[in-house]
Length: 505
Image (cartoon, rainbow, N blue to C red):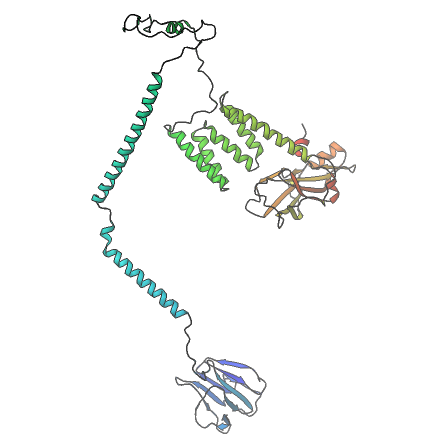
């Protein structure tokens, strides 16, 4: 493979790479390189032939000159790099693709070969170490004799510890016995006779024991006093606040405890699907296992499902005994969740104009678009609202914030009033839970559908046909209004429409 560079003629400056073995130059159409503009070229002027020893050029038509470096060519000539050929009026320079180096530079290995040598030496040392270990590997095994010595040492240490514990226990019992044999003191009880000094347990005349009473006690004034005193019985039927732990003997309860620990671990790592699946399985296997119900209620609240959490605490209230601490906890949690729901309702329904310049906009509504769909046999009018909720750059991470979107479509009445539509729309509010826990963008889509017959029914009820007017979008992160858009913009002057509070009875 070589290169031909045109130094004159119409193709001056062009480079031609030749990869074939035989190349014919001339004016004839069958030539490989045809130059019709040069009148001094023959039909087949010259031939380039690539051989094993190099590239050779030779003339094909006598009488038409062919020069090589200023010398006419009579026989095939081997070409060298940068040789100049003259074919008629066209000058061509021959170039090898890989030009010969004018001088041979000394090869520099750099750091590659030393590093390779170090790696090879390290591998050889490692292999030698492995071979030495393999030669001595029986000495590293635990033989039965070594294991027997270790077991005997362990048994001796354990016997020594047990004897030390028994000795300490014997000392404690000796001390307790000494305290119990000490002389007792008689205390005067309320409503009884004053205490009488304790008489010795022997007769006055000799060392024989005193006579015993009816109940086998010494007939002394102190014992007579205690036998006559009437003590009220102690009430032991008290209710325990902390329930005793469930015995692990029940395999169902033991399995439920294990699965509950696994569900709590999954919830901590934000694997809510796995946690919910494990808790549901616990409910099937052990329906009365209250700790699983409590964890399920907390999980639902974390994910923003306040209604489901409230229902789960109600279930706990039904299962827990009357004097159980679980029942008291369920009552408190139900009251707290009811207060949160009421507070959210009041915040959403606050009247007044929104201050669009002071909203946080940590969660933004990006480029909403409304698309109108052609009607069909069942649908008179259909519109699709599409937008995206984006987390603002540099905004705090809403990992635990429950995202809710209130979407309201409005219609215009015949008398000019603007009312929430009666058409079929996407349920509002749309609860997404912790939508930005693992992403920064959330697509949103809502529909507005007017079925056939709705407009005629509105005409009969109000005396005129209603028509589409616009929509509003309000995004809440928890209880904070983050962003709001409307079309037309004057709909933002209205309070947020809460369907449950405005539903017809």
